[in-house]
Image 1 (cartoon, helix red, strand yellow):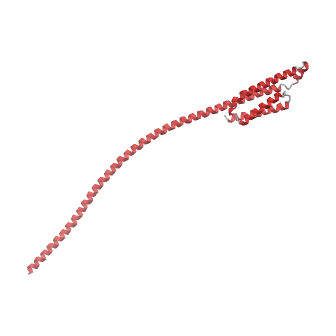
Image 2 (image 1 turned 90 degrees about the vertical axis):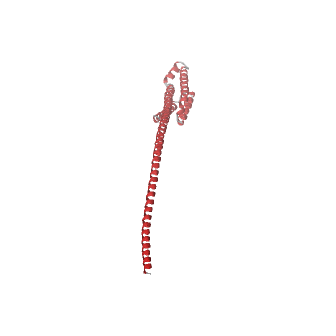
Image 3 (image 1 turned 60 degrees about the horizontal axis):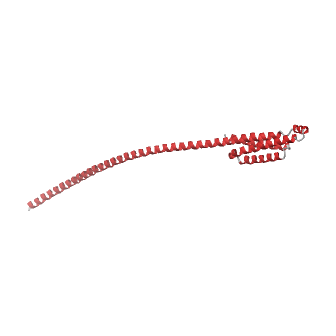
Length: 224
């Protein structure tokens, strides 16, 4: 009987040791398996991360190359646009300059024609205001009137000629100048038709001619 209990005790101790050893082995095995799994997962993760990095770098290089090509294309297109815009601006400036030059040339010719033409007309009319016509009339009846009529005819011809020259040159003139010039022409025509006897009225017409000419000069100066 004591032997049986002794055997049970030994077996119990053996089982206890085996269980303890098994528990220890299980603990170490679990830690080893866990470490192995962690290491394998880490290697796989590192591999995948490296592959991702590589693909990212390749994609980045492709993107950089694509952007460089797009940038070069945009630069060339911008150069072409600037060249085209520059040529367009140059053409526009040239056209504007030619237009201003044309306007100035027309207005300058208009002013010169007006100033010289109307001055000649008024000078002819002032020539009628003189005692010499009375002297000629007294020496030979009808001679003074004949000379007066000749001067009046000459003045009218000069007035009509000046008017004809001014019409195609006045396309860029201000409306006020055109209206006042037309009025001066009509009043000088009436003055000649009436015989040009009123010197005071002739002075008024000469003064109006001077005012119109001065305003034309100012307009020319603004256009330079």
